[in-house]
Amino acid sequence: MSDAKQYGAGTIVGLSEALARRLEEVVKDLRLPPQRDASAPRVPLVIRGFPPTKRANGEAEQPFVIVCPADGQVESHNEHRVRVGIVVGVFEEEDFAAGADWLLVFAERIIQSLQEKPTLEKRYVLRHPISWNIMFDQPYPLWQLEMMTEWVVQAPVILPDEGVV
Image (cartoon, rainbow, N blue to C red; front, top):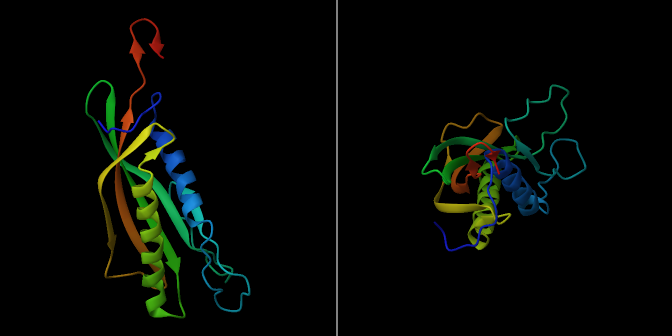
């Protein structure tokens, strides 16, 4: 168990929501340059679950950060470990190198935030290592980076004949 103080039990959904809120703070000031004929900078979207579908109307695609619990393990009656994937996606048609560069900017900001504050909402404690990967075969013009994090989640207390407390 970590030295960080924890208050109360957590849930996998709660972890996903807390991590998404943290990542919204991390990327809120990032602005990617406009694409095509658009004049507005592209603002990152933080999504819980699965990636958005590509728009068919020719509109510029927004960069995204996806938070999705991947798997877990029950360590004991009171402690679970949950691995949560973070996928960063950037649509970049005009500048080949910029797509990969933007992925690294996102990754560095996310890693820095998690290392500076490894506990979310006094319930979810980050375990190292944090891994990341940029696949060599990118589905151009979508560039993707995958990160994997591991968290300790205190389980709710279950009392006989009283249920979850």
